[in-house]
Image (cartoon, rainbow, N blue to C red; front, side, top):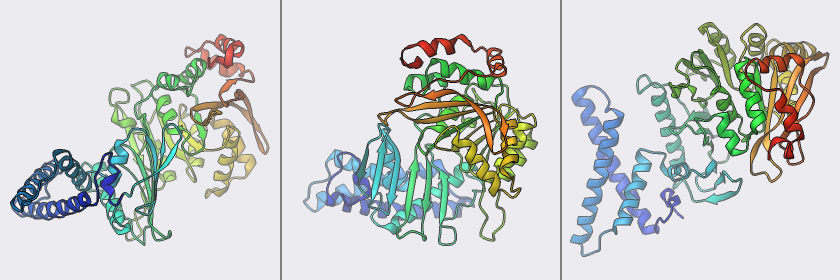
Length: 462
């Protein structure tokens, strides 16, 4: 494999690569002339939909011209399936995600990691991994591809007007953005030997707890308990390692929020997309952090966004991922009556989430000591749900649920009301407090289902 489009199943040989490069170059030149003519005539850039239509028309024209040229020279034109493949590859390069597009089109792929243009590895939804073909012909072309994706993402976020600056160069070597399909891209350069990127994909953008039950992430009693916890306006943190499915579970919990409530989401990079489904969440303000511009001004971190979000009259605040200074304003808000908040945090266990919160609070400008942090956590957080993988490392599942009951100096007191069984799935553990059971029962949860799951085969997972 010597070209980015050769990731496409059934792609051809090096001669086909040569045709793709020629067609792409000629289409790009004609497109540049067409866009300049449009801007000169109208005084404004060519709209995105018109540019896409023009690009596809030019691809057809160039391919027709190539076929005529080949026949006039006494050579056979491209076979229909090859011509179609070449046209698709050129369109991907000029309109889509270039050599990444075939990988993004494969619904089985959950992660893409590239260490340079030709060292590309993918992880599939079943947990298996494989090395695939190059995503670009050179590292320089890979850099240009990522910069174009960054520019497209900026335009998409602002509806094409006043695009948000998305720098990626030696002065700003780290890039985070959301692709058009909702995937999250992270890229880095200059501080690595070769440019590198990682793409995380979410197969379930619109998902409910019932959907996760079908996937084996929760069982019936967990589905009912977590749904009731959202309706009861409990503050819930979702913990787990990278790729465990925290964002997917967060979306599923959010689906249980009544449509009439106003939601503010706070993220490092747009990912939750709760504002995309107006039928389920009609009143959503999505906030995204921002790095400083070229002059070193205009930076907005998640801590600042959280304080701003609280002034927007939210019924609930949802934090895509807690990872730093925003932990103090978030815990303060949760403990001062802004109940029903949700968030995710990287932690290896449900108990480990408390240690992470303590570390973040110690590093924040407020420099809270552990005892104060734990007291704040005990006032703010009601439940911590941990996600992991089952014994065969193939299925994501809730492994533990903890109820926060208080603080004791250097420790947060909690009940592990669901604990992992032998294969890692959560089964009933310590009895919940009377207050928690009362709150859940008031929102439709049947406390008797815990006893039934306790005695059921597999702890309720059968």
